[in-house]
Image (tube, rainbow, N blue to C red; front, side, top):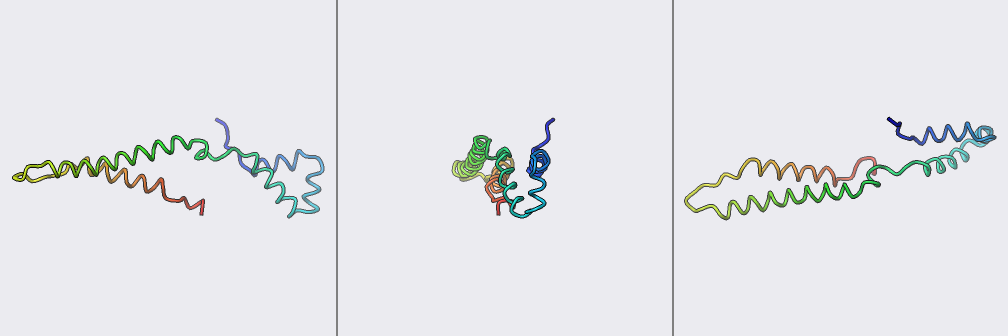
Length: 115
């Protein structure tokens, strides 16, 4: 199992394995570290959400289809019931609709890390 690459690991490897860079960090720490931080973040792979955006769209689309079909299913059941009968919408239809809407809200809400 491979370890997730971290920018701090790249930065340490770069400073320790590049001749003269450690002395440059000691002489001008602020500007050198800012430049090195920009270099090391370029070497990191993109986050998984960016690479797997197709899967994200499939999940959001599927949850949207489930929630819309649950809503229209409840409307259809209530419209087709005979007038002399009382209608009880199935609990599984309500559960599927509310779970899909809750999952969509969780997926589409902005994460606290991106604020």
